Image (cartoon, rainbow, N blue to C red):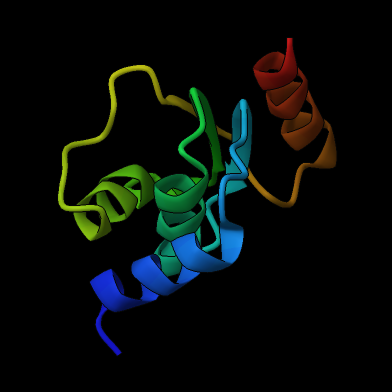
Length: 94
């Protein structure tokens, strides 16, 4: 199934629900992140990435057939350093 069909079906399931903000992990699952952004249309989006997933924003935006939004926040932390991940997540939330 192509992505545009998946997005349409997901939008139908979500209905009128919207998210004020989303924090997404750079899990290399671009489809999932793009579906959430495309269906929930959050006003603010933050990505918590690792050095290995630094290009995740661009891949998600490409799925949505657009450029990354300049308001999207991108934070990078090494996943093996729990304190660093926590600091970056805390910075996003604040």
